[in-house]
Image (spheres, rainbow, N blue to C red):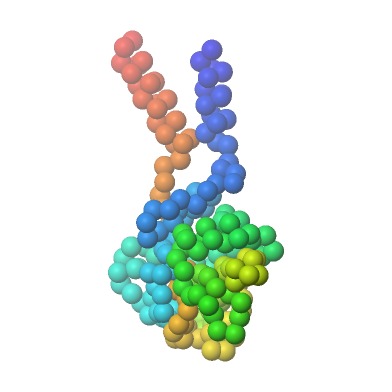
Length: 196
């Protein structure tokens, strides 16, 4: 009986988090599939890569620029990968991470969340850019772009964008369910041992 219960509990706790939902924690968003917290794009709005990277307040909190691959995983967690973004998923992403621009000039985009991040492979000079956007209401559509190689004037880490933030990420040590289960079993074992 106890063995079956333990097997069931182990199976439940070790099951992967499939289709995990991003969790809004105010100015940060937690991605349970990766264990990362993402700072809202609006927190670094209009700041250059170098300005943000050298900010002691952000580095003291453990934030760093995300890589292109990490942003791609974030987009997958939010269901906004290129070609699959819907109005609902794009709207949710923009609400979570903050709208960094609206009514971009010479386009049909009316709501936009974009940010700069490290390129893959890491480039010491150039950056990449990723965004989620919505088209004008009379042309309902949503889209996303991951890791657009930064062209002029985005080709340096000193450029200050007027319509985006920075994708910043930090690891969050979250206790896993399996670790909690093992601690509970260990405690039960200690209690039984004391009784005998």
